[in-house]
Image (cartoon, rainbow, N blue to C red; front, top):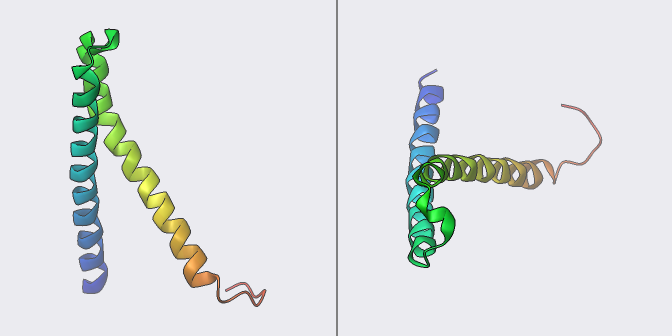
Length: 84
């Protein structure tokens, strides 16, 4: 039980780190785009939505990729046809 709780805390900390990294990347990306002064940069709501939604979407995609890779790597060697 204690190992499961530690694992959940570890995953939560890792997800928080991913959110921090993704949020920084999105902020830098938006900063570079806004320097070019496109018309949509005047809409503050659009930028706020992007700063909130894009890092979350990136975390979901990163976890999906991680899950897919773990499934391929760990279950790929056991293709005996049996359902476990």
